[in-house]
Figure (cartoon, rainbow, N blue to C red):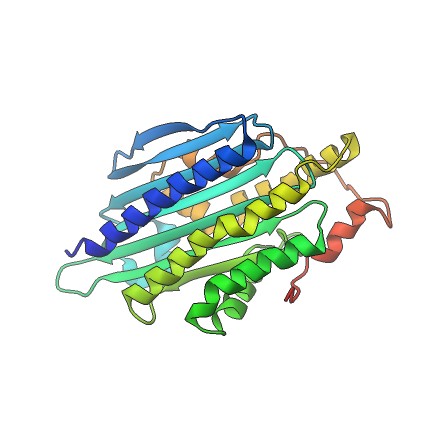
Length: 301
């Protein structure tokens, strides 16, 4: 088996995790990441980093994993039946950031690579990834900035790439039982293997490297915005939608749990504090009611 593609991706991912963690620590100014290295009994392992109780970030989790096995979990073979009977390796970096201030959006980013093998057959491989933004009190300039960075990351690979992955993000991060998007979208792609390894690798790197440029300017603009108990309570309520999506619809969560991944690392995406309220309805015309206007796909550029 040719391990060069996996080695190249692993080198990039470890460096990406390091760079993002340093940038988040510098932005927060007080908190530091705690790292837990772990080993998966069935093969592989990773390093999970969590920062808690910072000046800006209530909780931020940035995880790297590289795991492998002899048989694919059911969640993967249902999506890709040609993977039945193949050994596999999966590696990626995934993060979720939950800020204190309700005016700073929650965000998620993931970039990953997958290979599957069996004797006397060509390997099956693909890349996936993306990033999305979940504001509670949206600002149009923030959302436009977010999508402009996403567009610019995709532009060297063709003008059709951003619209396709933007639409895929809107469709994937959609809570069908609520009939609303999880936030204002961004990029999402999976099963990427057209154009050869180098092109796919370069596109995935561009998305991963673009995350900080997309997110940190928004943090700097909103981190000192005044808020009170009302805004905090609404933030905690809307965090419930994050829990609902990750536990009901997210394929990555299901794959991680079914493949015997480290539970604490898989679920570190969940918010540290959250509340649910039966039949909640925001006051008509309020800032809280305004959020609904943003939970439908829109062309932000």
